[in-house]
Image (tube, rainbow, N blue to C red; front, top):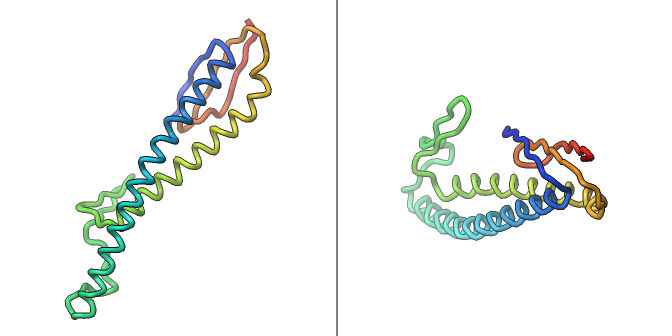
Length: 140
């Protein structure tokens, strides 16, 4: 979990920061979705080839484990991943980005009510995994 603290001189500056982060995340998500679609096509092609090879008697057994995966204590190492393994990894990333976008949109919606205030403020924001989790507002 990444934790950070950022300060803003106004609520407008903070909301602008949220908008920029949302834009960046949406752009990244779009790129990943295009890549994911390409990989899904590749997975389907590999599946068809394996199906033909299995019919010919030269395919791998169904119970075969993934010999290219090494489970470490804190992460999984995949050597020469299959298209399916790449798709699964990207799907996890896409889901994480979608969740982050949803949480940022909720923060923005919650704070837009305060956006019209014409009061000089100092805002300190606590971030967890790049999403605001707490705001400390001080009137200057």
